[in-house]
Image 1 (cartoon, rainbow, N blue to C red):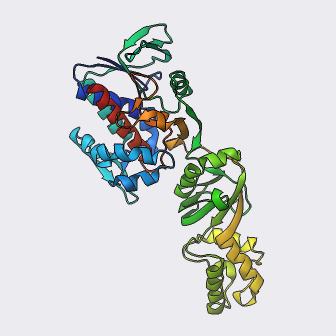
Image 2 (cartoon, rainbow, N blue to C red):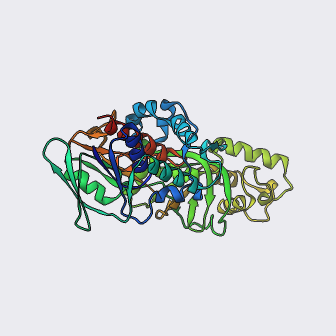
Image 3 (cartoon, rainbow, N blue to C red):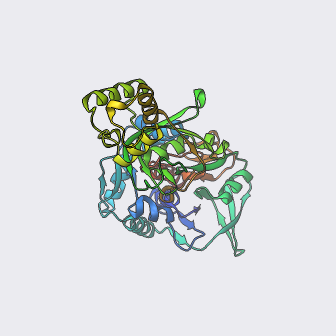
Length: 407
């Protein structure tokens, strides 16, 4: 059997290896357009590679996927994070779990994962062809045979094709030509550009927990988590999660829409006022700007006090009821304006791709074209940051490779 895998990323490599392991007689070839494979693996997690996440219950795991979670329930029951850990362990690569559940190689070096995958591919006789961009796919009859034409003009015959081209527009084009519907791809996992006097010169300031909200009513999206103030706006887990869950809404608004920030997510405007009244009673002779709650950085507190129109020298004893209400509002319902999106370079992910109903998730086979399989980000599946997107790649790649190998 001749198997061609188009795309030398995590899903493509894992699929190729799974196929070769399932059927040692298969001739498996990976075609990669770039001069080096596994590019996203190399840069992910700040160069450490966030391999997966320490969440072993499939029903819990799928909650981390804004799109595609339901479709992944069955696949995760067959090959989940614990299987990923065991697979790498068998290759001599140990993973470690960090406090937030993310899992990395103990070496803290993505090269460990890249070298492992390349080595196992070589051991299983997977042929890797780099700098081999594909120009077109041509089905041959109804038996699942294909011809893959390279940009050099070379034509490669294939009995089965695994398309693992990530968010490449070419991959979407070939899938569309094969009869698939493509859900319009838009960015996911990005930072927010903000220009607000309350945040000027606060780059590098981190807040352990905030609650962010865009939209109202049925359009409301909320996320809670750490936040980092940057030179261009805000980043951190809370922002990235909100950008993922609100990806289509943000895209529709051209990344210009109001953002509500609760800097004290355990409080609402009423309980915040109560806490501020207690501060007023306990510290009447202290300046407001010098009595920041422990969970808030002092410089941010000073900006919020200023935004509430409380003079820098004012004592708590002199703060009016109206001023306390304004400060409580700034703390729990601060209104900001998103003015665009930045890029989260380590985990650039796309929302959208091949419509999931057109794929058999028991085998990852196309329901539209014989002999065609899919794995990874080319599908309309995306997870939040934390190793979830790689787990989708390992799982769908393994299932596709196994299915092709055992045919």
